[in-house]
Length: 439
Image (cartoon, rainbow, N blue to C red):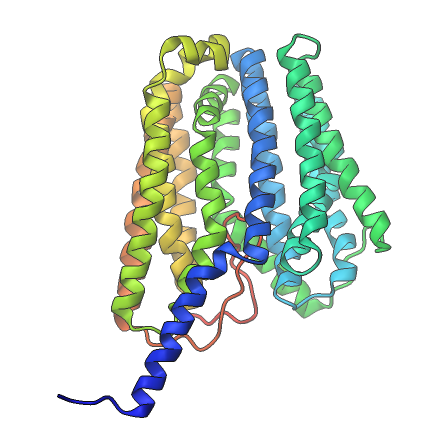
């Protein structure tokens, strides 16, 4: 019988200890705060979406879905351009709110103009509230990632409570859907501005970055727009080319699938540290770890999506009202998109942990460039059904692309030399961070 050497035994103990820490890490410390903050934020957004979907006619629901999509787009862009640099320690946290205001005002002007020209109250409200909403999102993420996570969660709980109150008044017939949206957006914007004022940071829009850092920051923003941001850009293109009714039908279906999407979004915060804990293990161990995570996520999201598909008409009508007839034919395709998004997210996170920045950008850009014309063409061809087919096809292509690339990467990659910081907000990480190495 061969007795292992002392160095080999010590190496095995260290690896076992790292794996144990990786398993425990997602359930302790800041990871728990991140999951709680994300869950609170998503719950408030879900309440808003359910209320508007129940009260608004299909065209009005489309206007809401477009406005909310542009809010999500602006939030992701701000994270990529400003917030990620603070989390990675590459930017001064005290000067960041001023840059957030620059991004917020830059996005608010075209949204506000589009709302006035198009007669959309949702877009007008989004444009007015956008700077404050971005300040709130930035403060939440930085607070959980580097500052005081408890305070961030309390602010998020306050916003969710205000959203729940507005939703309740809306469902009781006291408020209309536009007013409910106004209370949601106004509360979030007010919290953002108050947080900055209380922190003592500059409340005036200023950029304060040199040329090199500005070039890098804008590069990260461009990467976001052609990758993760392409989903929102595709919805905008559908609204312009086909009309609000298609966007409204997609929004109604996605509202019912909100809990499953919430599970995917919250899991992102846990997946990255879990995979990061296996960096120093061999490729087979990392591969098995990633597959296990994907299977667990699938075991959670698939039943949640299936439950939506099995909803009786009475429940669907109670939740969505007359919009149920527009959403019901799309549910199977949108459920497939949601479940596939969770599987693709695991492999995407694996690329981040491996530090494969160039490969990530190439795959994300290719999928993003394909997504916009494919979804728009599907909407022109068969309306909401055609757009849903295109979204499901893109989700399956994403799974194949990300997992095929990740397995190939593990097949030829050794130990990663530099860790990649995990995003604390539970959303998809933007392609940023000075520690990434291209592969």
